[in-house]
Image: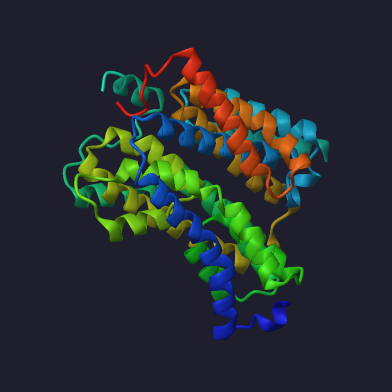
Length: 116
Length: 258
């Protein structure tokens, strides 16, 4: 099934609806079912929250260490340096998200421009 | 709420003080359209829009995917799979594996927005908006609000962040390959930075911090060992270790919502 069968008609949208929307939304519905039984102060909630947090942290590490697309052409040392720099800027300058995020990206950009 | 003042101050008071009614709570959520997370998501969605165009999708299809899926990594996976002529079943499988992460996020956010009486339809809408960005913002902003205001506030956040995603997708589609690679690389770098800083900002317990540390350490390892299942394995193993360690460090002294 290639893009030829995914043209702008109803069939194409149905395919995207199933493989995109339903395949994704299913887990939100299951999450609702699990969440309905969770007490905010209970240990099961703490555990599920730790799982969700670790999962996002794992995704972050994957995005920085094994990046896809244009970021892959940036050397690992530059990525790790700019990442650490962004965190340092965040904690050093009043814990501002904007400063940390923009500062880290600016460091990456600057390092790439200096390298040529 | 003894802990709450300190927590809010530590992150620059993300919770608006004068929220009086559900309507205002919703409107304040909408204002997140003009925020760092919305800007980061917009920038990342530029890349998705360009990718969709590159893969032969129409603008309407790209917007359809952004609005219905509401989960950027999954959108990228679907477009990438179909552009490589994978079967629809293979694409759906890859998408659904990546979407498993939404289960623990929804399971922990829905109890937070739940008010006195159940409002199933609105909770279903809230669940639709759950993705990493809105999960993080919900965790930052909702605990400081009265329970009755959390659901409307979160719905506002969801609409705002979703709008940023759709707008970014359309803009990226229109610009397509107009940006130099150096700039695209820096834009792609915004997302992991925003994720990690928000996780650190929202963390309050030994469990939270060890989950971040362990997740960051084990994530790349499992990416090499169990590609496709790496996020799931990282979440379950690093999360469980962090949970157990947190319990041992300070046994049930600090329930997460206070």
